[in-house]
Image (cartoon, rainbow, N blue to C red; front, side, top):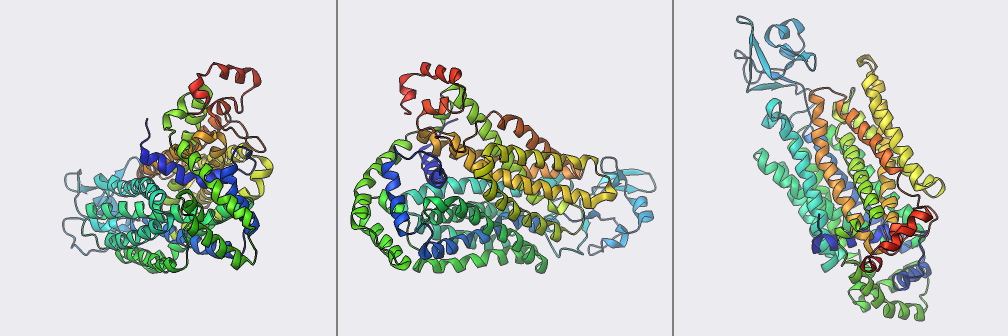
Length: 569
Protein backbone atom coordinates (compact mmCIF):
# COMPACT_ATOMS: atom_id res chain seq x y z
CA UNK A 1 0.00 0.00 0.00
CA UNK A 2 1.49 3.33 -1.02
CA UNK A 3 0.58 6.98 -0.97
CA UNK A 4 0.77 9.32 -3.91
CA UNK A 5 1.64 13.02 -3.54
CA UNK A 6 -2.01 13.80 -4.16
CA UNK A 7 -3.03 11.51 -1.31
CA UNK A 8 -0.52 13.16 0.97
CA UNK A 9 -1.83 16.65 0.19
CA UNK A 10 -5.36 15.44 0.80
CA UNK A 11 -4.37 13.89 4.12
CA UNK A 12 -2.83 17.15 5.29
CA UNK A 13 -5.81 19.26 4.23
CA UNK A 14 -8.51 16.98 5.57
CA UNK A 15 -6.91 16.56 8.90
CA UNK A 16 -5.60 19.97 9.83
CA UNK A 17 -8.89 20.25 11.66
CA UNK A 18 -8.52 16.94 13.49
CA UNK A 19 -5.09 17.98 14.69
CA UNK A 20 -6.68 21.17 16.02
CA UNK A 21 -9.11 19.12 18.06
CA UNK A 22 -6.38 17.72 20.28
CA UNK A 23 -7.00 20.02 23.22
CA UNK A 24 -4.84 18.01 25.58
CA UNK A 25 -1.83 17.85 23.28
CA UNK A 26 1.39 19.46 24.35
CA UNK A 27 2.05 22.46 22.13
CA UNK A 28 5.45 23.47 23.38
CA UNK A 29 7.08 22.15 20.22
CA UNK A 30 4.58 23.76 17.84
CA UNK A 31 5.16 27.45 18.33
CA UNK A 32 4.72 28.30 14.68
CA UNK A 33 1.38 26.47 14.45
CA UNK A 34 0.06 27.94 17.69
CA UNK A 35 0.82 31.53 16.69
CA UNK A 36 -2.35 31.67 14.60
CA UNK A 37 -4.40 30.29 17.50
CA UNK A 38 -2.87 32.93 19.76
CA UNK A 39 -4.36 35.57 17.50
CA UNK A 40 -7.74 33.83 17.49
CA UNK A 41 -7.75 33.90 21.29
CA UNK A 42 -7.29 37.67 21.19
CA UNK A 43 -9.95 38.06 18.50
CA UNK A 44 -12.43 35.91 20.41
CA UNK A 45 -12.67 32.12 20.27
CA UNK A 46 -16.14 32.25 18.77
CA UNK A 47 -16.98 35.91 18.35
CA UNK A 48 -19.70 37.50 16.28
CA UNK A 49 -17.67 37.29 13.07
CA UNK A 50 -16.83 33.61 13.56
CA UNK A 51 -20.40 32.71 14.49
CA UNK A 52 -21.73 34.35 11.33
CA UNK A 53 -19.21 32.71 9.01
CA UNK A 54 -19.46 29.37 10.80
CA UNK A 55 -23.25 29.29 10.50
CA UNK A 56 -23.16 30.17 6.80
CA UNK A 57 -20.53 27.51 6.04
CA UNK A 58 -22.44 24.82 7.93
CA UNK A 59 -25.58 25.33 5.81
CA UNK A 60 -24.10 23.60 2.71
CA UNK A 61 -23.88 20.44 4.83
CA UNK A 62 -27.68 20.28 4.50
CA UNK A 63 -27.40 20.17 0.72
CA UNK A 64 -24.67 17.51 0.95
CA UNK A 65 -26.96 15.35 3.07
CA UNK A 66 -29.65 15.59 0.36
CA UNK A 67 -27.34 14.00 -2.18
CA UNK A 68 -25.89 11.34 0.11
CA UNK A 69 -29.30 10.11 1.25
CA UNK A 70 -31.74 10.82 -1.57
CA UNK A 71 -30.76 7.46 -3.05
CA UNK A 72 -32.98 5.82 -0.43
CA UNK A 73 -35.98 7.26 -2.28
CA UNK A 74 -34.90 7.59 -5.91
CA UNK A 75 -33.83 3.93 -5.80
CA UNK A 76 -36.56 2.77 -3.44
CA UNK A 77 -37.36 -0.95 -3.43
CA UNK A 78 -41.07 -1.45 -4.16
CA UNK A 79 -43.19 -4.63 -4.31
CA UNK A 80 -43.25 -6.23 -7.76
CA UNK A 81 -44.39 -9.36 -9.54
CA UNK A 82 -43.94 -10.95 -12.94
CA UNK A 83 -46.26 -9.71 -15.66
CA UNK A 84 -48.42 -12.58 -16.86
CA UNK A 85 -48.70 -13.23 -20.58
CA UNK A 86 -52.38 -12.25 -20.73
CA UNK A 87 -51.98 -8.98 -18.76
CA UNK A 88 -51.69 -5.56 -20.38
CA UNK A 89 -48.58 -3.44 -19.82
CA UNK A 90 -50.48 -1.00 -17.64
CA UNK A 91 -51.96 -3.62 -15.32
CA UNK A 92 -52.29 -2.70 -11.67
CA UNK A 93 -50.11 -4.51 -9.15
CA UNK A 94 -53.01 -4.92 -6.74
CA UNK A 95 -55.12 -6.64 -9.40
CA UNK A 96 -53.43 -9.91 -8.43
CA UNK A 97 -51.07 -8.85 -5.65
CA UNK A 98 -53.79 -8.74 -3.00
CA UNK A 99 -55.47 -12.02 -3.94
CA UNK A 100 -53.59 -14.91 -2.34
CA UNK A 101 -55.62 -17.60 -4.14
CA UNK A 102 -54.92 -16.15 -7.58
CA UNK A 103 -51.29 -15.44 -6.71
CA UNK A 104 -50.73 -19.06 -5.67
CA UNK A 105 -52.06 -20.16 -9.05
CA UNK A 106 -49.55 -18.20 -11.09
CA UNK A 107 -46.54 -17.67 -8.81
CA UNK A 108 -44.36 -20.20 -6.97
CA UNK A 109 -43.32 -19.66 -3.35
CA UNK A 110 -39.73 -18.59 -2.84
CA UNK A 111 -38.22 -21.11 -0.43
CA UNK A 112 -35.81 -18.56 1.07
CA UNK A 113 -38.23 -15.68 1.68
CA UNK A 114 -41.37 -17.84 2.11
CA UNK A 115 -43.32 -15.39 -0.05
CA UNK A 116 -44.52 -15.42 -3.64
CA UNK A 117 -41.64 -15.13 -6.07
CA UNK A 118 -41.27 -11.88 -7.94
CA UNK A 119 -38.85 -13.37 -10.43
CA UNK A 120 -40.51 -16.59 -11.60
CA UNK A 121 -43.94 -17.43 -12.99
CA UNK A 122 -45.83 -20.70 -12.66
CA UNK A 123 -47.59 -22.47 -15.54
CA UNK A 124 -50.79 -23.95 -13.97
CA UNK A 125 -51.13 -26.55 -16.75
CA UNK A 126 -47.67 -28.10 -16.57
CA UNK A 127 -46.86 -26.94 -13.02
CA UNK A 128 -43.46 -25.76 -14.32
CA UNK A 129 -41.81 -22.44 -13.56
CA UNK A 130 -39.83 -20.04 -15.70
CA UNK A 131 -38.07 -16.72 -15.24
CA UNK A 132 -39.83 -13.58 -16.44
CA UNK A 133 -38.43 -10.48 -18.10
CA UNK A 134 -41.30 -8.03 -17.56
CA UNK A 135 -42.64 -6.85 -14.23
CA UNK A 136 -45.57 -4.99 -12.73
CA UNK A 137 -44.77 -2.69 -9.82
CA UNK A 138 -46.72 -1.40 -6.87
CA UNK A 139 -46.96 2.32 -7.59
CA UNK A 140 -49.14 3.20 -4.61
CA UNK A 141 -46.20 4.80 -2.79
CA UNK A 142 -43.92 5.94 -5.62
CA UNK A 143 -44.83 7.27 -9.03
CA UNK A 144 -41.46 6.10 -10.32
CA UNK A 145 -38.00 5.05 -9.09
CA UNK A 146 -34.89 3.92 -10.90
CA UNK A 147 -35.89 0.39 -9.95
CA UNK A 148 -39.25 0.62 -11.71
CA UNK A 149 -37.94 2.56 -14.70
CA UNK A 150 -35.00 0.29 -15.51
CA UNK A 151 -36.22 -3.00 -13.96
CA UNK A 152 -33.46 -3.27 -11.36
CA UNK A 153 -34.91 -6.44 -9.86
CA UNK A 154 -34.20 -10.17 -9.76
CA UNK A 155 -31.01 -10.87 -11.72
CA UNK A 156 -30.36 -7.11 -11.97
CA UNK A 157 -31.00 -6.31 -8.31
CA UNK A 158 -27.27 -5.87 -7.75
CA UNK A 159 -27.35 -2.95 -10.20
CA UNK A 160 -29.23 -0.94 -7.57
CA UNK A 161 -26.52 -1.67 -5.00
CA UNK A 162 -23.84 -0.79 -7.54
CA UNK A 163 -25.36 2.65 -8.10
CA UNK A 164 -24.93 3.47 -4.39
CA UNK A 165 -21.45 1.95 -4.38
CA UNK A 166 -20.38 4.00 -7.42
CA UNK A 167 -21.70 7.13 -5.69
CA UNK A 168 -19.38 6.37 -2.76
CA UNK A 169 -16.50 5.82 -5.18
CA UNK A 170 -17.17 9.39 -6.28
CA UNK A 171 -17.06 10.53 -2.65
CA UNK A 172 -13.64 8.92 -2.28
CA UNK A 173 -12.31 10.46 -5.49
CA UNK A 174 -13.74 13.85 -4.53
CA UNK A 175 -11.89 13.78 -1.22
CA UNK A 176 -8.62 13.19 -3.03
CA UNK A 177 -9.13 15.58 -5.95
CA UNK A 178 -10.78 18.52 -4.23
CA UNK A 179 -8.65 18.11 -1.11
CA UNK A 180 -5.48 18.49 -3.12
CA UNK A 181 -6.88 21.35 -5.22
CA UNK A 182 -8.00 23.31 -2.16
CA UNK A 183 -4.49 23.01 -0.74
CA UNK A 184 -2.99 24.37 -3.93
CA UNK A 185 -5.50 26.97 -5.10
CA UNK A 186 -7.35 27.90 -1.91
CA UNK A 187 -10.42 26.81 0.03
CA UNK A 188 -12.77 29.42 -1.37
CA UNK A 189 -12.44 28.89 -5.12
CA UNK A 190 -12.60 25.09 -4.82
CA UNK A 191 -15.67 25.39 -2.61
CA UNK A 192 -17.54 27.25 -5.33
CA UNK A 193 -16.36 24.98 -8.12
CA UNK A 194 -17.63 22.02 -6.08
CA UNK A 195 -20.97 23.74 -5.51
CA UNK A 196 -21.54 24.37 -9.21
CA UNK A 197 -20.49 20.85 -10.16
CA UNK A 198 -22.75 19.36 -7.50
CA UNK A 199 -25.81 21.28 -8.69
CA UNK A 200 -25.36 20.76 -12.44
CA UNK A 201 -24.37 17.10 -12.15
CA UNK A 202 -27.39 16.58 -9.89
CA UNK A 203 -29.75 18.05 -12.48
CA UNK A 204 -28.16 15.95 -15.24
CA UNK A 205 -28.61 12.88 -13.04
CA UNK A 206 -32.34 13.57 -12.99
CA UNK A 207 -32.33 13.80 -16.80
CA UNK A 208 -30.29 10.62 -17.36
CA UNK A 209 -31.76 8.54 -20.24
CA UNK A 210 -30.37 5.22 -19.00
CA UNK A 211 -28.82 3.50 -16.00
CA UNK A 212 -25.19 3.89 -17.09
CA UNK A 213 -25.42 7.65 -17.59
CA UNK A 214 -27.32 7.84 -14.29
CA UNK A 215 -24.54 6.18 -12.29
CA UNK A 216 -21.88 8.25 -14.08
CA UNK A 217 -23.48 11.52 -13.01
CA UNK A 218 -24.21 10.13 -9.54
CA UNK A 219 -20.48 9.47 -9.18
CA UNK A 220 -19.73 13.06 -10.19
CA UNK A 221 -22.30 14.29 -7.67
CA UNK A 222 -20.62 12.15 -5.01
CA UNK A 223 -17.23 13.68 -5.81
CA UNK A 224 -18.61 17.23 -5.78
CA UNK A 225 -20.51 16.61 -2.54
CA UNK A 226 -17.30 15.48 -0.91
CA UNK A 227 -15.59 18.66 -2.09
CA UNK A 228 -18.37 20.95 -0.84
CA UNK A 229 -18.64 19.40 2.61
CA UNK A 230 -14.93 18.85 3.17
CA UNK A 231 -13.79 22.32 2.13
CA UNK A 232 -16.63 24.13 3.92
CA UNK A 233 -16.01 22.06 7.05
CA UNK A 234 -12.31 22.91 7.20
CA UNK A 235 -12.88 26.55 6.19
CA UNK A 236 -15.41 26.95 9.01
CA UNK A 237 -13.22 25.28 11.65
CA UNK A 238 -10.12 27.27 10.70
CA UNK A 239 -11.91 30.42 11.85
CA UNK A 240 -12.74 29.05 15.31
CA UNK A 241 -10.51 29.20 18.40
CA UNK A 242 -8.95 25.99 19.78
CA UNK A 243 -11.20 25.78 22.86
CA UNK A 244 -14.36 25.83 20.74
CA UNK A 245 -13.37 23.49 17.94
CA UNK A 246 -14.71 20.26 19.39
CA UNK A 247 -18.13 21.81 19.90
CA UNK A 248 -18.04 23.49 16.48
CA UNK A 249 -17.03 20.25 14.77
CA UNK A 250 -19.85 18.24 16.32
CA UNK A 251 -22.40 21.02 15.79
CA UNK A 252 -21.51 21.11 12.08
CA UNK A 253 -22.43 17.44 11.86
CA UNK A 254 -25.86 18.35 13.22
CA UNK A 255 -26.48 20.49 10.13
CA UNK A 256 -25.84 17.37 8.05
CA UNK A 257 -28.38 15.54 10.21
CA UNK A 258 -30.90 18.33 9.57
CA UNK A 259 -30.43 17.82 5.83
CA UNK A 260 -30.82 14.09 6.42
CA UNK A 261 -34.30 14.64 7.89
CA UNK A 262 -35.31 17.23 5.29
CA UNK A 263 -34.60 14.71 2.53
CA UNK A 264 -37.67 12.76 3.66
CA UNK A 265 -39.78 15.91 3.34
CA UNK A 266 -38.74 16.38 -0.29
CA UNK A 267 -39.34 12.70 -1.02
CA UNK A 268 -42.76 12.69 0.62
CA UNK A 269 -44.10 15.43 -1.65
CA UNK A 270 -42.16 14.49 -4.81
CA UNK A 271 -42.79 10.84 -5.71
CA UNK A 272 -41.14 10.93 -9.15
CA UNK A 273 -37.44 10.12 -8.84
CA UNK A 274 -36.35 12.47 -11.64
CA UNK A 275 -38.08 15.53 -10.20
CA UNK A 276 -36.87 14.59 -6.72
CA UNK A 277 -33.23 14.46 -7.84
CA UNK A 278 -33.55 17.84 -9.55
CA UNK A 279 -35.37 19.33 -6.53
CA UNK A 280 -32.58 18.43 -4.09
CA UNK A 281 -29.90 19.66 -6.50
CA UNK A 282 -31.09 23.19 -7.23
CA UNK A 283 -30.95 24.59 -3.66
CA UNK A 284 -27.18 24.24 -3.75
CA UNK A 285 -27.02 27.12 -6.23
CA UNK A 286 -28.16 29.49 -3.47
CA UNK A 287 -24.75 29.15 -1.83
CA UNK A 288 -23.07 30.75 -4.84
CA UNK A 289 -24.05 34.06 -3.19
CA UNK A 290 -21.39 33.31 -0.56
CA UNK A 291 -18.73 34.37 -3.05
CA UNK A 292 -19.24 38.01 -2.07
CA UNK A 293 -19.02 37.70 1.71
CA UNK A 294 -17.19 34.47 2.66
CA UNK A 295 -13.43 35.12 3.01
CA UNK A 296 -10.55 32.86 2.11
CA UNK A 297 -8.96 30.96 5.00
CA UNK A 298 -6.45 33.24 6.74
CA UNK A 299 -4.56 30.15 7.90
CA UNK A 300 -4.22 28.93 4.29
CA UNK A 301 -3.12 32.39 3.12
CA UNK A 302 -0.38 32.39 5.73
CA UNK A 303 0.93 29.01 4.60
CA UNK A 304 1.11 30.46 1.07
CA UNK A 305 2.90 33.58 2.40
CA UNK A 306 0.07 35.88 1.26
CA UNK A 307 0.45 37.83 4.47
CA UNK A 308 -1.20 41.11 3.45
CA UNK A 309 -4.44 39.34 2.53
CA UNK A 310 -4.39 37.35 5.77
CA UNK A 311 -3.81 40.51 7.78
CA UNK A 312 -6.80 42.25 6.16
CA UNK A 313 -9.06 39.31 7.04
CA UNK A 314 -7.87 39.27 10.64
CA UNK A 315 -8.45 43.02 10.88
CA UNK A 316 -12.03 42.49 9.61
CA UNK A 317 -12.56 39.87 12.28
CA UNK A 318 -11.26 42.22 14.94
CA UNK A 319 -13.48 45.05 13.75
CA UNK A 320 -16.70 42.99 13.80
CA UNK A 321 -15.80 41.40 17.13
CA UNK A 322 -14.97 44.88 18.50
CA UNK A 323 -11.49 43.95 19.67
CA UNK A 324 -7.97 45.00 18.77
CA UNK A 325 -5.06 42.81 17.79
CA UNK A 326 -1.84 43.78 19.57
CA UNK A 327 0.47 44.89 16.72
CA UNK A 328 3.39 42.87 18.09
CA UNK A 329 1.26 39.71 18.12
CA UNK A 330 0.26 40.16 14.50
CA UNK A 331 3.86 40.81 13.45
CA UNK A 332 4.93 37.74 15.39
CA UNK A 333 2.33 35.65 13.57
CA UNK A 334 3.47 36.79 10.15
CA UNK A 335 7.16 36.13 10.85
CA UNK A 336 6.67 32.83 12.66
CA UNK A 337 4.50 31.52 9.85
CA UNK A 338 7.67 30.33 8.11
CA UNK A 339 7.91 27.70 10.83
CA UNK A 340 4.43 26.47 9.93
CA UNK A 341 5.30 26.23 6.25
CA UNK A 342 8.42 24.22 7.04
CA UNK A 343 6.47 21.93 9.37
CA UNK A 344 3.79 21.30 6.74
CA UNK A 345 6.45 20.49 4.13
CA UNK A 346 8.09 18.03 6.52
CA UNK A 347 4.79 16.30 7.32
CA UNK A 348 3.89 16.00 3.65
CA UNK A 349 7.02 13.89 3.14
CA UNK A 350 5.44 11.09 5.20
CA UNK A 351 3.76 8.18 3.42
CA UNK A 352 1.36 5.42 4.36
CA UNK A 353 4.35 3.08 4.66
CA UNK A 354 5.46 5.03 7.73
CA UNK A 355 2.37 3.74 9.53
CA UNK A 356 3.77 0.20 9.35
CA UNK A 357 7.43 0.77 10.20
CA UNK A 358 7.29 -0.38 13.84
CA UNK A 359 5.42 -3.36 15.37
CA UNK A 360 3.09 -1.66 17.86
CA UNK A 361 2.32 1.25 15.55
CA UNK A 362 1.60 -1.28 12.80
CA UNK A 363 -0.87 -3.09 15.05
CA UNK A 364 -2.62 0.14 16.02
CA UNK A 365 -2.82 1.19 12.38
CA UNK A 366 -4.50 -2.06 11.30
CA UNK A 367 -7.00 -1.78 14.15
CA UNK A 368 -7.79 1.84 13.33
CA UNK A 369 -8.30 1.08 9.64
CA UNK A 370 -10.73 -1.69 10.57
CA UNK A 371 -12.62 0.66 12.92
CA UNK A 372 -13.06 3.20 10.13
CA UNK A 373 -14.23 0.53 7.72
CA UNK A 374 -16.81 -0.93 10.14
CA UNK A 375 -18.16 2.39 11.38
CA UNK A 376 -18.65 3.79 7.89
CA UNK A 377 -20.17 0.60 6.48
CA UNK A 378 -22.58 0.32 9.41
CA UNK A 379 -23.53 4.00 9.47
CA UNK A 380 -24.32 4.23 5.77
CA UNK A 381 -25.73 0.72 5.66
CA UNK A 382 -28.28 1.55 8.36
CA UNK A 383 -29.05 4.94 6.81
CA UNK A 384 -29.79 3.36 3.43
CA UNK A 385 -31.66 0.37 4.86
CA UNK A 386 -34.68 2.21 6.33
CA UNK A 387 -36.84 1.25 3.34
CA UNK A 388 -36.46 -2.41 4.29
CA UNK A 389 -37.77 -1.94 7.83
CA UNK A 390 -41.37 -2.61 8.78
CA UNK A 391 -43.81 0.29 8.90
CA UNK A 392 -43.85 3.61 7.07
CA UNK A 393 -40.55 4.13 5.29
CA UNK A 394 -40.77 7.93 5.53
CA UNK A 395 -41.26 7.78 9.30
CA UNK A 396 -38.43 5.25 9.64
CA UNK A 397 -36.12 7.46 7.63
CA UNK A 398 -36.89 10.52 9.76
CA UNK A 399 -36.38 8.53 12.96
CA UNK A 400 -33.04 7.30 11.64
CA UNK A 401 -31.99 10.94 11.26
CA UNK A 402 -33.46 12.18 14.54
CA UNK A 403 -31.48 9.69 16.63
CA UNK A 404 -28.26 11.36 15.46
CA UNK A 405 -28.99 14.48 17.53
CA UNK A 406 -28.82 12.71 20.92
CA UNK A 407 -25.77 10.81 19.67
CA UNK A 408 -23.84 14.03 19.06
CA UNK A 409 -25.04 15.58 22.31
CA UNK A 410 -23.89 12.43 24.10
CA UNK A 411 -20.40 12.89 22.63
CA UNK A 412 -20.19 16.50 23.77
CA UNK A 413 -21.11 15.49 27.31
CA UNK A 414 -18.95 12.36 27.67
CA UNK A 415 -15.83 12.40 25.47
CA UNK A 416 -13.82 14.59 27.84
CA UNK A 417 -15.22 12.90 30.96
CA UNK A 418 -15.41 9.18 30.28
CA UNK A 419 -12.60 8.93 27.77
CA UNK A 420 -12.51 8.08 24.07
CA UNK A 421 -11.97 4.35 24.45
CA UNK A 422 -14.86 3.77 26.84
CA UNK A 423 -17.30 5.76 24.68
CA UNK A 424 -16.11 4.04 21.48
CA UNK A 425 -16.29 0.48 22.81
CA UNK A 426 -19.52 1.09 24.71
CA UNK A 427 -21.22 2.55 21.64
CA UNK A 428 -20.15 -0.34 19.40
CA UNK A 429 -21.31 -2.92 21.97
CA UNK A 430 -24.75 -1.28 22.16
CA UNK A 431 -24.95 -1.06 18.35
CA UNK A 432 -23.87 -4.68 17.88
CA UNK A 433 -26.25 -6.18 20.44
CA UNK A 434 -29.20 -4.07 19.25
CA UNK A 435 -28.71 -5.06 15.62
CA UNK A 436 -28.04 -8.76 16.22
CA UNK A 437 -31.19 -8.99 18.38
CA UNK A 438 -33.21 -8.79 15.13
CA UNK A 439 -32.33 -12.45 14.67
CA UNK A 440 -34.66 -13.30 17.57
CA UNK A 441 -37.50 -10.82 16.98
CA UNK A 442 -40.67 -12.49 15.59
CA UNK A 443 -42.40 -11.01 12.55
CA UNK A 444 -45.44 -9.96 14.58
CA UNK A 445 -43.23 -7.68 16.71
CA UNK A 446 -42.06 -5.62 13.75
CA UNK A 447 -42.10 -2.42 15.83
CA UNK A 448 -39.42 -3.92 18.06
CA UNK A 449 -37.23 -4.57 15.03
CA UNK A 450 -37.52 -0.92 14.04
CA UNK A 451 -36.69 0.14 17.61
CA UNK A 452 -33.53 -1.96 17.76
CA UNK A 453 -32.44 -0.66 14.35
CA UNK A 454 -32.79 2.93 15.64
CA UNK A 455 -30.85 2.12 18.80
CA UNK A 456 -28.14 0.66 16.60
CA UNK A 457 -28.12 3.79 14.44
CA UNK A 458 -27.82 6.09 17.46
CA UNK A 459 -24.96 4.05 18.90
CA UNK A 460 -22.99 3.76 15.65
CA UNK A 461 -23.34 7.51 15.07
CA UNK A 462 -21.73 8.12 18.46
CA UNK A 463 -19.04 5.55 17.67
CA UNK A 464 -18.29 7.06 14.26
CA UNK A 465 -17.94 10.52 15.79
CA UNK A 466 -15.52 9.17 18.39
CA UNK A 467 -13.36 7.42 15.80
CA UNK A 468 -12.44 10.77 14.21
CA UNK A 469 -10.99 12.17 17.42
CA UNK A 470 -9.61 8.92 18.84
CA UNK A 471 -7.71 8.17 15.62
CA UNK A 472 -6.12 11.62 15.42
CA UNK A 473 -4.84 11.20 18.97
CA UNK A 474 -3.34 7.74 18.37
CA UNK A 475 -0.92 8.72 15.61
CA UNK A 476 2.25 10.75 16.23
CA UNK A 477 2.37 14.26 14.79
CA UNK A 478 4.75 13.43 11.93
CA UNK A 479 2.33 10.88 10.43
CA UNK A 480 -1.01 12.05 11.86
CA UNK A 481 -2.33 13.45 8.59
CA UNK A 482 -1.28 10.33 6.69
CA UNK A 483 -2.94 8.13 9.31
CA UNK A 484 -6.17 10.07 9.19
CA UNK A 485 -6.14 9.98 5.40
CA UNK A 486 -5.67 6.21 5.41
CA UNK A 487 -8.53 5.82 7.88
CA UNK A 488 -10.78 8.02 5.78
CA UNK A 489 -9.97 5.92 2.70
CA UNK A 490 -10.97 2.73 4.50
CA UNK A 491 -14.17 4.45 5.60
CA UNK A 492 -15.03 5.06 1.95
CA UNK A 493 -14.37 1.39 1.22
CA UNK A 494 -16.88 0.55 3.94
CA UNK A 495 -19.39 2.91 2.34
CA UNK A 496 -18.80 1.30 -1.05
CA UNK A 497 -19.49 -2.20 0.29
CA UNK A 498 -22.50 -1.24 2.46
CA UNK A 499 -25.03 -1.37 -0.43
CA UNK A 500 -24.00 -4.94 -1.22
CA UNK A 501 -24.61 -5.93 2.40
CA UNK A 502 -28.03 -4.28 2.24
CA UNK A 503 -28.97 -6.31 -0.81
CA UNK A 504 -28.90 -9.38 1.44
CA UNK A 505 -32.42 -8.35 2.42
CA UNK A 506 -33.49 -10.16 -0.75
CA UNK A 507 -32.54 -13.38 1.07
CA UNK A 508 -33.66 -12.57 4.60
CA UNK A 509 -35.00 -9.13 5.57
CA UNK A 510 -33.04 -8.64 8.87
CA UNK A 511 -29.82 -10.15 7.48
CA UNK A 512 -28.11 -6.79 6.76
CA UNK A 513 -28.77 -5.67 10.33
CA UNK A 514 -27.29 -8.88 11.69
CA UNK A 515 -24.17 -8.51 9.52
CA UNK A 516 -23.66 -4.92 10.66
CA UNK A 517 -24.17 -6.02 14.27
CA UNK A 518 -21.51 -8.71 13.99
CA UNK A 519 -19.09 -6.22 12.43
CA UNK A 520 -19.69 -3.79 15.30
CA UNK A 521 -19.08 -6.40 17.99
CA UNK A 522 -15.93 -7.63 16.28
CA UNK A 523 -14.61 -4.06 16.32
CA UNK A 524 -14.88 -3.92 20.10
CA UNK A 525 -12.41 -6.77 20.51
CA UNK A 526 -9.81 -4.94 18.45
CA UNK A 527 -10.51 -1.47 19.88
CA UNK A 528 -9.70 -2.76 23.36
CA UNK A 529 -6.04 -3.05 22.25
CA UNK A 530 -5.80 0.71 21.68
CA UNK A 531 -4.59 2.95 24.54
CA UNK A 532 -6.76 5.67 26.07
CA UNK A 533 -5.74 9.16 24.95
CA UNK A 534 -7.76 11.46 27.23
CA UNK A 535 -5.48 13.77 29.25
CA UNK A 536 -2.36 12.10 27.82
CA UNK A 537 0.62 13.81 26.24
CA UNK A 538 0.31 12.80 22.63
CA UNK A 539 3.23 11.44 20.56
CA UNK A 540 5.23 13.59 18.17
CA UNK A 541 7.74 11.19 16.57
CA UNK A 542 7.44 7.61 15.36
CA UNK A 543 9.41 6.48 18.43
CA UNK A 544 6.91 8.31 20.63
CA UNK A 545 4.09 6.61 18.75
CA UNK A 546 5.66 3.19 19.29
CA UNK A 547 5.93 3.83 23.03
CA UNK A 548 2.55 5.52 23.43
CA UNK A 549 0.19 3.31 25.41
CA UNK A 550 2.66 0.49 26.02
CA UNK A 551 3.86 -0.78 29.36
CA UNK A 552 7.32 0.57 30.27
CA UNK A 553 9.07 -2.77 29.72
CA UNK A 554 7.60 -3.15 26.25
CA UNK A 555 8.18 0.49 25.44
CA UNK A 556 11.90 0.09 26.13
CA UNK A 557 12.08 -2.29 23.18
CA UNK A 558 11.59 0.73 20.92
CA UNK A 559 15.27 1.47 21.52
CA UNK A 560 15.89 -1.15 18.87
CA UNK A 561 14.18 1.01 16.23
CA UNK A 562 16.65 2.22 13.60
CA UNK A 563 17.86 5.80 13.92
CA UNK A 564 16.14 6.92 10.70
CA UNK A 565 12.76 5.77 12.03
CA UNK A 566 13.31 7.46 15.38
CA UNK A 567 13.64 10.82 13.73
CA UNK A 568 10.15 10.45 12.31
CA UNK A 569 11.31 10.76 8.73
